[in-house]
Length: 82
Image 1: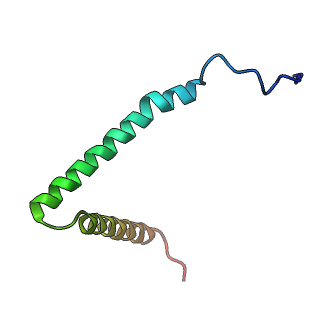
Image 2: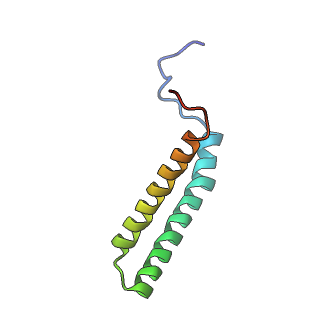
Image 3: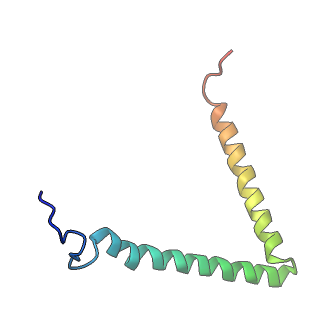
């Protein structure tokens, strides 16, 4: 491949297939998911009277605790070193 003087100046015809898929499929879905979670958090906050940050912190703590318990249970299934 020969690189000419105008190598960086030439613009391709369009975005690559991966970039097109990212911008048309993944990003809109991620934004819709985030918006839906925000609405659910807001509704839960309104119903319970608890601030959204406290609810979010509780959910995060519960998720971490569940992951730790899962990792500990998986570590116990194999043979242990003595």
